[in-house]
Image (cartoon, rainbow, N blue to C red; front, side):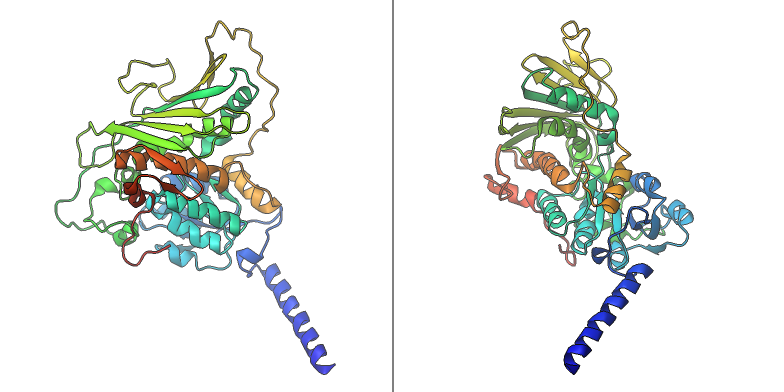
Amino acid sequence: MPSRLSRRRFLQHTAAVAATAAVAGTLPAAERRPGPNDRLRLGIIGLAGQGAANWGPVRGEEIIALCDVDVNRAGPARKEFPKARFFEDYRRLLELNNLDAVVISTPDHHHAFAALPALRAGKHVYCEKPLAHSVSEVRLMREAAAKHKCVTQMGTQIHAGENYRRVVEIIQAGTIGSVRRVHVWCSTRPRPGQRAQKRAQSPKGLSYDLWLGPAPSRPYHPSHLHFDWRWWWDFGGGVLADMACHYMDLPHWALDLRTPTTVSASGQKTYKGDNEVPDVMQVEYEYPARGRQPPVHLTWYNSVTGPNLNGKVTYAGYGSGVLFVGERGELLANYGDYRLLPEEKFKGFVRPKPTIPRSVGHHREWVEAIKNGRTTTCNFDYSGALAETVLLGNVAYRCGEKLQYDARTGRANVKAAAQYIQREYRKGWTL
């Protein structure tokens, strides 16, 4: 009896301490469940550019930690949240055990290195597109989110727009019939940059080695930092990785697409500069049938204003857009508008009754899902399949061969694809 009583008192004492800690807010995020009226304790990784666009909508939560490798660009956020601890290395930020969630807005080559430790610690994650730098990293992030039951959201903010929701309803209502063909194009072009010919001093306040992180070491040059890192394979994936998650999101959502079975790509670099990524690019994705829905052939085109690399096919007002080709007509869409074609056939068209509710906001949806135990529309399961598909286009381009892809194993039939599906990391950086 004495030993049992001692054990009972010990357990009661432990429970009391845990309860006190929960009230005090010192339990690790994995063991603490914020309530609907609680403020989330957030860490913000990446503070300028898109980072600023992402911390703005969550400023009403409790921002307890900030991180950026450039202290100069971090200034506005530090002024906005003067009580938050500041870090240059997000690995130190992620050691905080009182974080509920993190918002990640770094260059692509850092996404997985920031997100995976957070997910494995039970921290909820909002991460910018295209989710990660490589196909294998996307798959690891999706698996970790599911295993640790984290609430996740990828930064495809246009997904919350009203136009996308109405287009999805129209397609799913069968207005243009079964869809087997989709064209997606984006007019964005890379900006020419230069490689440093010799080692140069990085600006004061920038921790350049931390900025490189897992990427290969190279001399500093301003043309591969900030927005322009997108145009170098070491850090980004060109226009495809930058923009396709926004535009291909619409057909993926409307047609319940996941990952393709075959991918092929062609393109060329027509601009001057040392950047490696192509500007003119075309990618062919072939998806299998889904239930009663037929197979889909989707073509991506970048750095053009219509679904044709020669510029011979354009649609007024749709310099970037999506064209669904159905058995009974076509639907043309961009971020804010859509048209049914041919217009005379759909004259007097009555839109189907809305079935997808109005968004509370892309960031707010994530915050409320954490507090109410729900999921999000761009969770890592949905957006992971989208990002995996997008990045496979770059794998196919760099291989120069058509890929047969096995989504179950994450492998392609082309031997050279493995080095692009899973990249190598600089010494000292591991997942």
